[in-house]
Length: 560
Image 1 (tube, rainbow, N blue to C red):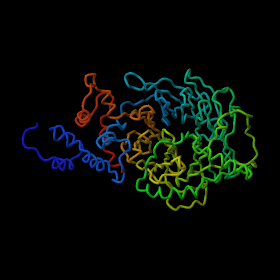
Image 2 (tube, rainbow, N blue to C red):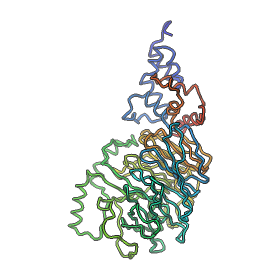
Image 3 (spheres, rainbow, N blue to C red):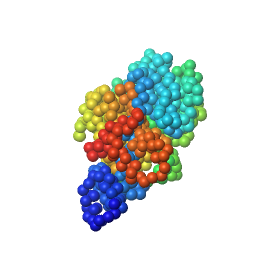
Image 4 (cartoon, one colour):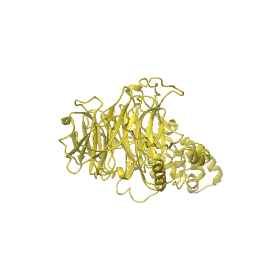
């Protein structure tokens, strides 16, 4: 349609600036001139900021090649299309975990089973591979699982209903080669969960009360391969012994392997960047985490300081956990470095009988969240720690450790930089929770290269962009969403688990179109018509929930 007098490009651009993005795309199919104007970078820059409601002080993602493609990435590559619902669990599904290759994932449930699933079927559907019931070991339910680094073993954590106190838990290690049980380890309290340190060793916890409000948390390094008939000889080496005050305890342990952090910083608060740069020099000179060693002399302390400087450029391994100092509800992140000589069980075996007079290990760093922590997750490079919390009232004073302050319904997601060991000022918010302080439960979140996702008590999962700090999609369930998990092999595949006893599988609109396309349609073609195709078809055939697409992409403008 290149006949007749044409409008100047500047006038066409001015008209397009007043149209929504889908109308601009359709208009671009009219003629060559309009198509050229519809791909104008200035146009898509304006559409990007207005549609996603992002402050203009926020720059474009460093890896983005154009504003048009960046708009399309946030619109078309978010896993917001429900493609499958897994109903094999008979009770609430509490946790999901992918293998490092992404070819399997595990699920834990109140039905006391741990199930393994295959994600590599030719038809694209996910299928059940194996299910193990833990009731024969007197478990109440399974609550957490994690694959070891080489995906050969599975750690399963659960609540133990034995003669111990009700807060006792247990960790089981299952071989993924033949699904046999290799070992069982005591874990107290049960919400320590446990985690892998390396391919063959895992970390568990134990708790000893030494007073009315004072206790001692002992973190143990355990070998994965042990005799399953014994429950008391699995502990092979003590890692740390930490004192708890005001009825607090250590919970939710995880390991971060910080690989020197050569990657660029994640810019989370652009308005604060200039101020942060000005303050950086002062912080480097004035603030250092205090390290306490009651048995070290002055000369030993100087030697340790020198060794710390020498190790500045080396990879570091941190043990992260929730703790507290004011009340029993977890409100602080504790950070303790694990040194290389602590990562093996060689040497004498340590028993659990220790007197209360022995010194305690001090923490290298503590970050106060000023609220009840209900979830944590690491970025894939272990550079950033994302923390779900429900805030306390501003300026509140805690006079009774057994009476923590009321907590907000809104869930804040804090971001902690493990390179600088400080919290970034800007936090994410969109999801909600309603249970009171003494009934709070863990809501598992997950982080991919570009996105972060979390469950919530409002019957939805949420997805945010890590760079722009905007909520991109809401994922509907019929009850509380307890856990979400991105595939490490493909961030356009996401799972969500709920109290409605289901696991939902979500894929991006782009991946859904590719899966539905016939071989004839898969030949190289322009990206523009394929993107427009989704605007013409509001529903998808088969098991794809088209409604989830339309709802998911309306939410970015509401999430701010």
